[in-house]
Length: 351
Image (cartoon, rainbow, N blue to C red; front, side, top):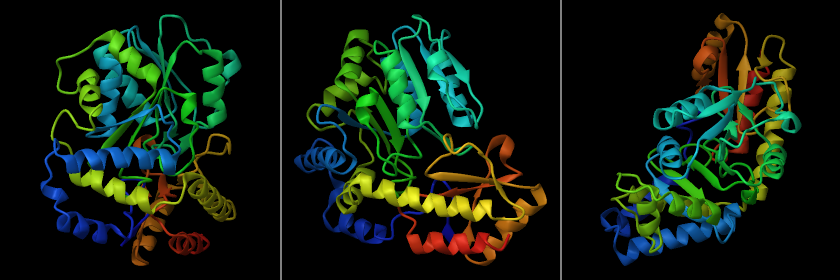
């Protein structure tokens, strides 16, 4: 079954080869204090710089999931409180996690079709970190780099943290616009779930050191202490890191992936726009995601389209939260080939 679910999503077709190589190379038994693992970590970080254009002075860390990063950021970096700008369920969950740790956490909810008005955005001095969900998987919206740039210019003294779970390795980022970027591998990296990544600027690392939080399982100071020697503070998902390394080696540079996904998304959008019965959940092209498309319609129709797709060997992603019964979501992730996407586009043309 070919899946277009937005995560866990289709894995790269080369994955069986990677898995066999991991076994043959003995990486499955590698100790995370060994030279083999430290080399793997160092090489993977360098590949992030080469393929995704992560700056030389930013640090790559490994966690268990993107969700764990929500806790780490509030626990180990935020000193006063974080201010969250969000439009959907995952952004809402992030602010919920943060409030459990820091009651002073606050935020601004915007609508899916609403472009953030940076000029009139007011964030008080009570908040030292601005949290953004760059790509909201639940309602298929995104925050473009231009908005993040505007926020950085308006609030240069504040930290900016960006959730990129459904977009990292799919679209090109200007990492210099924010201090914290994070995600996980089961979406645009085309890998099985079970590995989170956290990318920190020197400013974020300094903020962690200044706060001095320590002693917990996932205290960032302890993670960074180990990462300085290309080790992890606990036994990590070594296989996940190896697979990430192999995917990065085989990837084109991110600007080429970005261009292909944007072109494919235009074709997808045109297919839905020309449909007699389906429409896009997000009307505003400025806030519509590049990597996830949400399609909406009457509940009976959505159910029928999903069943028809399965008969043709394709699985569409279900809607999420309040949109679950009246929408489906399509992942526009790099592991899905252009031919596979064309098959889906042809299928949607029937409606």
